[in-house]
Image 1 (cartoon, rainbow, N blue to C red):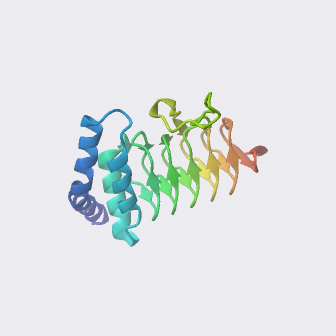
Image 2: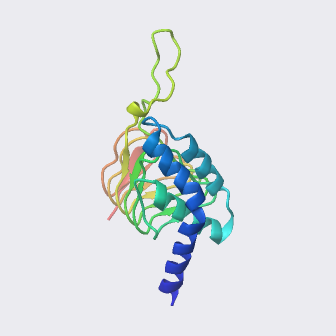
Image 3: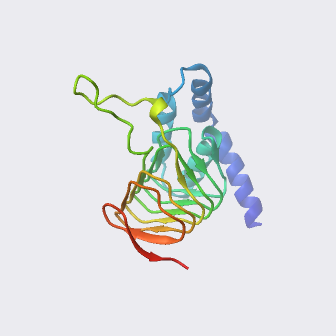
Length: 195
């Protein structure tokens, strides 16, 4: 009964978000590469829908507009995907107010509230004129969060995370993290091996 009810609610949610998803899909198809103005506006609207209905609608919207988003995940209130190049696998939990850049999130991973996963660490460069360059889709670096990773609250991730690792709350990750270890701090440092 519970599985059937969830299936029906997911289907109804997909129908309800179609007026938001269709303009995003048209933008992706007919606008220049990297155009995400409509996608970001619709994502911000979805982010502030409260409660359980909001969780269903966010998941439905992103399942229609991202590279891949499972209907068996949770995307918390205030959480936003800033690019379409996001993959969210099954049984992923994304807490409230999470900001996702271009990222693959493996199954059973947990992303704590207020965490940020950026697109690498070199999106902006200092130009010849001494000013920082604006965002360019050509500079996106996709970050990989392997399966069964726990990212603590308010962590800042700019590099790949290995399977089964834990990133402590408030940790800043700028280099790749090996599988099955706990790291904490700014910059992230090894604490112990996880069994």
